[in-house]
Amino acid sequence: MINWYKSWRRQRILRSAHFDAGIWLRVSTELALLGGLGVGELDRLREAMILFLHDKRINGAAGLSIDDRVRYHIAAQACLLVLELDVDHYAGWSEVIVYPDEFLPRREYVDEAGVVHLSRHPLAGEAWPHGPVILSWADALSSVVRDGANVVIHEFAHKLDMRNGEANGFPPLHKGMSRAAWVAAFAAAYEDVCRRVDADEHTLVDPYASESPAEFFAVLSEVFFETPAVLKQCYPAVYEQMRLFYRQDPSTRLPIAEAADGAYRLSP
Image (cartoon, rainbow, N blue to C red; front, side):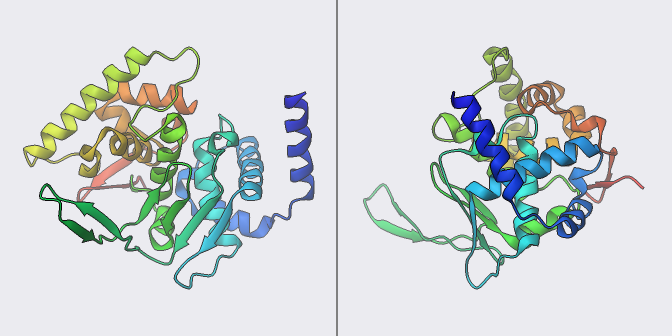
């Protein structure tokens, strides 16, 4: 009965939704990480976006006006993560807040002496358990270039990680996936990145990945979808676990990226 109602509700939403085909064509062309998706996959992505946008409010902050291009950009990238899963993986919260640029959240913390301090550091994105995803539009828009960095992928990977509590780099695994294999792959790669960062060595993934296992999972999700060949080369065991988790293999659909001045760009 529940599955019947869910299917009926979704079909009703899809039939009645206003979705601008012209803007979607523009956005799907702009986003390099959608390259290689077939017609059927793009159709399923569009349907997931409609369902996502039906259940989530995307609100502007600090004067940012939200139009369909902004909404489709964010929804497309968020829904790419769950293209082979289900948009219900984002259930339990209802809002995306978008600032024009980096934002300055107010943070209070107490030091060892009991003194309360106020901290304000600029952020490009943030995800709250059971709360909103917060994004910088300027940073989200930079994802039109496939360079291995993607704030939307990063924050929505945190949301998937939070499905079983606080983000810790260990999201709920699918039936048939091995917890031991996940831990072994991620622990070895995380230790390697932390060692390289501590030694001031060059890393092919953002050094921010060494901040915590949660950030490691989010950063490597960015690399998995943006420059999959890099992750597959550096940490093949992690790539395999992400392939199983996301049920996608971006390395088969995206051109190999080449290193240039420390960044990865599309091959000509």
